[in-house]
Image 1 (cartoon, helix red, strand yellow):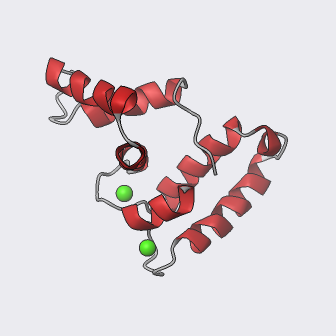
Image 2 (spheres, rainbow, N blue to C red; image 1 turned 90 degrees about the horizontal axis):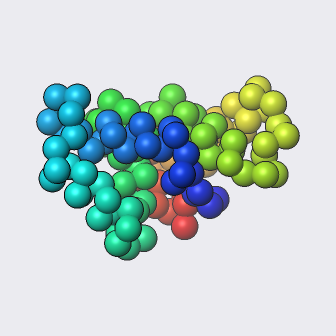
Image 3 (cartoon, rainbow, N blue to C red; image 1 turned 90 degrees about the vertical axis):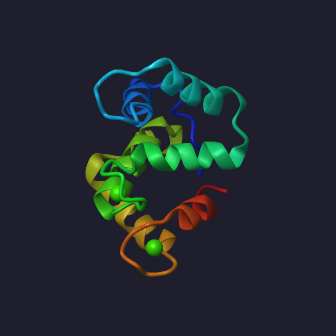
Length: 119
Ligand SMILES: [Ca+2]
Ligand SMILES: [Ca+2]
């Protein structure tokens, strides 16, 4: 699976919400610098972690099924092969992928599982 959504508006929005670490609706200089340094100079592992945090909407440190499906829908829209699929098909595929990625069978995807999956 290749992740290529960096130019995407969704990404910018997610980037904003992740960067706004004190959740005051504003991004201060330090928050912007952190975000940019991950994007520009981040090694692959930092990028994976950043991507993971982007989709961990409730910030509990794991991707629950609904969060993973949101992630998968996003990725699939950027994939030319999957683009032609309708939402229903992608949704059922997303569920299958979720169970495959959840190798520890915890019902949620942690960072380790996420990294393994996108390698
Ligand atoms: Ca979560
Ligand atoms: Ca798991």
